[in-house]
View (cartoon, rainbow, N blue to C red):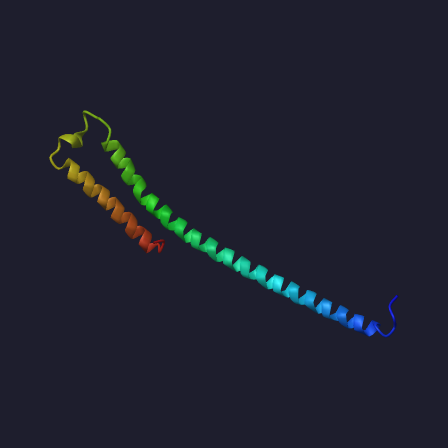
Length: 110
């Protein structure tokens, strides 16, 4: 069904088809690599955000604990009768926060 005179043209079309398929596969591999790079950068950014949020939560957990204890209705807490009890607790809470911030900055986590 194919003449001998058309065989060289069909081989030429076949070669062009193979070349186009190779080019498409190369572009597909490049696109796959770029997609992996993008997803990796997004994941890295999300990890940085999660690290900062974890540090903030770590700073507020002890403060929440202290506030929870002093928020209870106790009748016999020694600090309640002291004149400087409330400011002393606030100073302790501030010291805890500052100490944790300094520690995280020294570790280069923040």
